[in-house]
Image: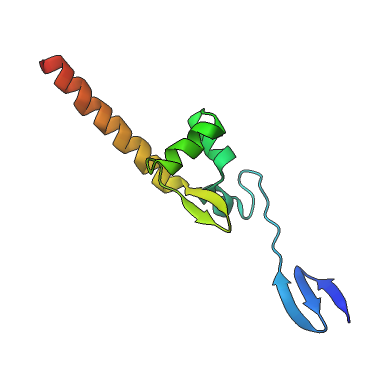
Length: 101
């Protein structure tokens, strides 16, 4: 049995088991765009300035668009931005209705 790690690949008896890529999280880094497209619960909470429990509640109610990957919730940033715009538009319509009454 021989395990080795070479250039980001984990080998077991000469067979590639895992391709490991390490991403640079610094803004402007080589892979920063890839990391910015998918948000964790914590990232989403920070972005929306809310608590993580509120984010979980919004997801479980079906209000916030999210996907579950390997038992972890992930939110696409572009869908989150669309959701925010929809909420803004809904609030504007509601305000205009209240003003008319």
